[in-house]
Length: 75
Image 1 (cartoon, rainbow, N blue to C red):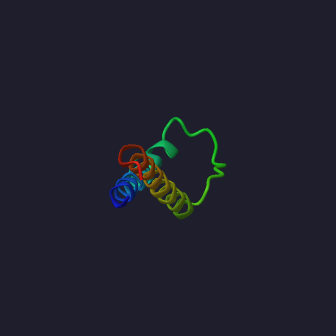
Image 2: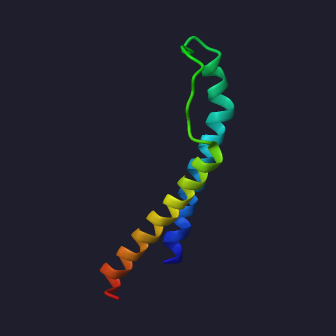
C-alpha cells in the first residue's frame, strides 16, 4: 500500500513541478507573443490546483495499490 501511495505522490509532484516550469518559462512568452488575443484569464489559483493534483495522485496511488493487493494476494 505504501508503494502505491509513494508512486502516486511522485507522479503528482512531478506534475506540479511541470506546471511550475510551464508557468514561469512558457506562459510569459505566450502572453507577450503573437498568440495573445485577450487578457481575461479566469483560472483556478495555482496553489489550489497543485493541492488538488497531489490529492488526486495520492488517491489514485492508494486505489491502484489496494486493487493490486486484493487481486494478487487475495486479502
